Length: 440
Ligand code: GDP
Ligand code: MG
Picture 1: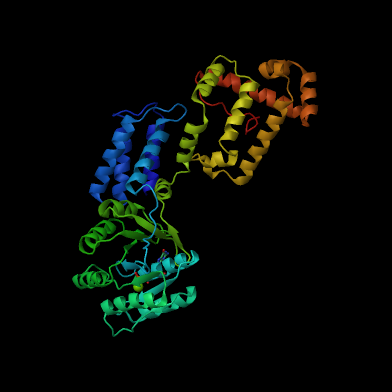
Picture 2: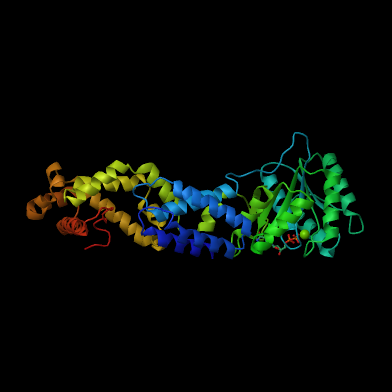
């Protein structure tokens, strides 16, 4: 799957200290493979990879963020860009009714999406009329009527003997009569694109001049989505798309292709069979979903915002010189707090996001206790943790002051000292582990 492939690519880069033309090739190959495996159109993949490479090689190195994380961020940003940056809402018109035409193959979820949209609009205090033009399947009209009753939205139909173009035209007239602000025209689909379906759709479009022509695409169709989008866009002209069945085990490739090929936005996604299961499409969320590897991206963003790089570097050299003391430790803990709760932070780190909430709670409690103990230390003691290692009476005082057992204070001091000497031995920077968290 796409997510796993990208995770592999990420792992390969993660040990490097800088993105170069050489070390990025493996990662790019993985992204290319992943996208092809997800049935993204070849041309779409080529353009995408070229953009990612350009952006990655031009990227500035961010301290505290490894190249793997940075690479993922770049892939993410490009994904967002390809999918259109922001949400594009349904068309609205100054004079009612706004006409929305639904198009797509049979079984993609057109009729369901019609009802979903009607409910979505109704919740925004807008009024709708749904129009049933699928005269080919006996149950199709009934399906829309049933949905209409369920969501309390009227349905216009003329039975299965009438002509779809006439039904659509009269449906819009009816909407004017009723004074509703939006007409949603459901249409028939075939299992495969065929000439007569296209001709009929084109005629309906010509007759009602829709403000929005939405292609309904089944997200599970992968590569087919590309061809489908091209054909519909060339022959009918679409102004947007709805990606359905996103609740299933989809590969995500369809989202990329639809936008790239038509240049038109995906406006909504369907996430279930129920009429409520519709969500506006957000390119950034979809990109995260496609990458699907813990929310590493927000971590990169937060790191950029919150961490004072100079501060981190100062701390690292202190560690190397064994000057890292409880003041630094407290500072680092506050830094982590700035970045949100420990739980939130850990969830963002791939691999650690599987920690149970009890583990996280335990860790958070532990951190609070540690902070309380450090707060009870004198300035001298914070600067010179060795004072505490040597003096039981100091430890006793801190225990009393912070409301903890003496043994806990001893443990904190031991862990801290051990950690510090470990960091020295490793002879490299990096954020030290938190004493009290699993150690001792
Ligand atoms: P149409 O032929 O294009 O009108 O498709 P329908 O609206 O009749 O839907 C076909 C099938 O797909 C039905 O069983 C729907 O319940 C199902 N369906 C539609 N949208 C979704 C969705 O977003 N998620 C899931 N899981 N099923 C959907
Ligand atoms: Mg239908």
